[in-house]
Image (cartoon, rainbow, N blue to C red; front, side, top):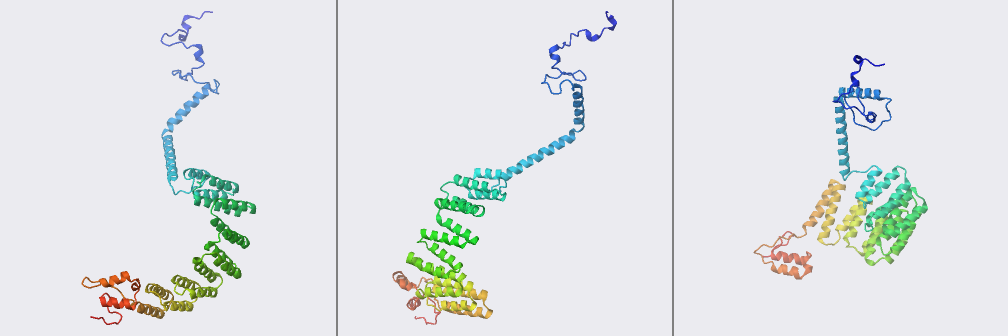
Length: 417
C-alpha cells in the first residue's frame, strides 16, 4: 500500500518558491500549453472548457499567420486609412462649396437649415420630389416653405406660391387649383398671381379661363394702363378685334388723359404683330395726326415698320420723318438711324445717297466754338442767360454768333468786320 520513496513524484513535494494555487482560483486562471504564463481572470466565454485546447491552437495559428502577413496587413490598413481620409476631405469640400447643387433629401434639409428663406432651395426641393413621382411630399414641402419663410420676404413667398400653382395645375384637380389660387390672392400681390394663371391657361390652350382671369384682374385694377393693354393684346391675339376696340374705348374712359397716348401706342403695336401691318399703320397715323412732333411715337412707328413692313414702306416713312421741321438734336437722331438702316439693308448706291443726304443737312447745323479770350462775347452770354429762345439755333442767333466771332463762316454768309 505504501509507495516506495524512490518512486515518489517530485511534484508532490511543496516548492517554497512557488505558491500553491488555491482551488477557487483554478477555475478563473488559464494556463497556456507551455505552462509558463498565467492569464488574467476573464469573464467566462460561451465556448467554456470544452474547446480550451482547440482555442489555444487557433490563437497560435492566428499569431503565426499574423507574423507571416504583418507587412501586407500594414500596407492594406494604411491604404484603407488614406482612402477614408481622402473621402472625408472630399465630402468636407463638397459641403463647404456654396455652389454645390444638392441631390438627396438629406442634402436639401442640410442646406435649408443654413438658408431657410431661400425660395430657390424650396422650389428645387419640390422638383426633387416630383422627379421621384412624390406629389404629396412636394405639396408638403411647399406648405412647409410658406410657414418657414419670413413674412417680410414677399418676393420669396411669391415664388413658392407660383410654384404651388404650377404643381396644382399639373398634378392636382380643378378644386385644388381654385383653393390654391384663393389662398395666393389673399397672401400675395394679386397682379402677379393673375398674370401667372393667365399664362398657365394660355399655355394649356384654355382661352376661356384666361379671359375670365383677365376680367377679374381688370375689375380690381381699372386705373392700371398695363392691365388694360394686356387684355387688349390678349383679345387681339385671339382675333377678337371688335372686342379689343370696345375695350380700348372703355380704357380711355377709365384711364387719366396722361396715359391715353401710351395705351393707344401699345394697342397699335399689338395690331402690328397679330392683326397685320395695315391695322397698325392706321392706328399710328391717326395718333400722329394730332401729335406730329412726338419723336417717341415716330420712333415706335419706325420700329414696327422695320419689324413688320417692307423696305419701300420703311424708306417712305424715313423720308417723311426727315422732312419734318424739328429740333436739330431730334433730326440728328433720325438721320443717324436712317443711315444705319441703309448701311445694313440697302444697296451700295442707296447707302451712298443716304450718307450724302443726311450729312449735307447736318452741315447746315452751326458748330459753336469756345470764345477766344480777346473776343467780346459777354453780351452773347447775357443774351443766352436772359433770353431762352436764343438757345435754339435760329437765324437771329446764328447772326449774333457770327457778329461776336463765335462761329466760322461755313454757311456761305460773309463775316462782317
